[in-house]
Image (cartoon, rainbow over all chains, first blue to last red; front, top):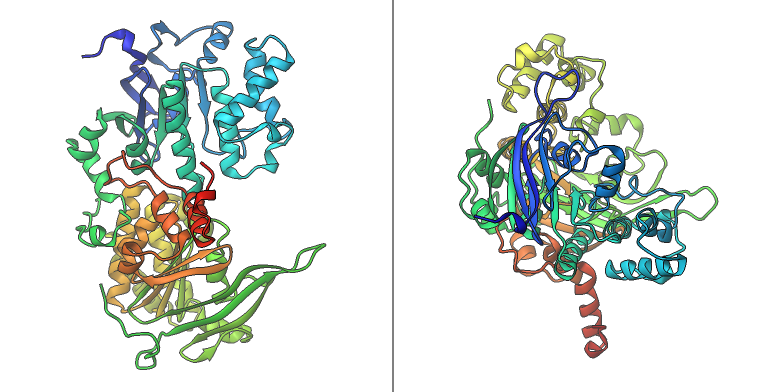
Length: 272
Length: 302
């Protein structure tokens, strides 16, 4: 269907059981992310979607399985090699209040990756690159010296995104990046991600519990439940003709902001 | 949806809550008092659901708490009348006869609302026991309430502790505590926000059914316009402590008047909508509205 060169990420048989747990947190998770596209993993709490993201990013070791980034197998690399790879696997987390070091300025936060990976030849070049990236996310040079506490939640998430894209990663992994934001701010951040994807050709792995957000942002969708992939397909497949009963029940449960639609909805069956 | 009585014709049935010009301020340590809710008026009528919708900082939760005067540090002015009885400035004893007995409350986080050290049955019985209901009768009513909320093995689980329940079951316990005293009004502050989407749908269906069966008035506080669309009869939109728009639910969604309401509706991604439709932000809508209002549409920055 798709040849290897068109895939930025391949995940095969990813399995992880946390110490002391009988049941695996994820089992046999497999999917591909196409280059320049975004894939959303949706699921409820405990579905294993975040564990999947963390195993891919190498933040926790998987027990089994393969992770291939742009043709290179990256699971089980030693620390030194993983550090090189990490430039190409950047993450944005849910809570912009705890994911940014409060003692670092916006310039330091966005410039850190450029410094660590030697991507700017001197301080001036680095500052210029930082300003370019701040502007890409809707901030400006005036924000360079400001600390995270001086920014709103939405602005902090923009800084987190600028920090992640500054090193031009091959894959941006977003773990619930808008779920702690108000709806009007959420819309801005979602539009920003769409714009960056178009402008920079970013490939995005997007983890979310909100199906409407995934429909808006992601061309491909993986539905997870209890650590397993229950259904995967294109956005149209999943949202217009879901096959798995679990996917159907998820979609039926989402409140639709239209009183003419939602009042026709039949009550869901109680779970036993 | 229930029809209810039009505004101003209360009095035939008990359970009419009327809030007028409610203003809530907090004393700040080294500054003037800070007003967080400014002159909010609303009514909750028997059998009708009013939704208070807004983003964080809108004052929607502060309004709900001020109605029951739960926060002793808040400086509250205005009027809160329940069937004509003024609650602002009422004594502790009078308030205790309102809280739980005539107005029930459900909060977002079931773990924070429940006492982890006591069995859930004991907690459900408390609103009755406090009011002098005999233990045996209180237990029976508690079990019946829990069963009405879809907990099939209510009697067997009555002695279990909160940690032995899932999130959705815990919220059912919280709702049982709120409703066991048979209040006429329920105030629910983001009651399903902490729940997964399928559990949320079940809890919403339950709230819908039990409040309808009991002909209760509901004040539903939420940030989620999808929930508002499915649950509310009347909607009040709040922003920065003030009411910016009030309308019937059909009218609000089909013809929102205030730019902020339009912005909110345009900013919500919809699971039933084609994604080629780009979300708009509240700021964009407001900027356009302001420019048009000033006759300066051409001054809008590209």
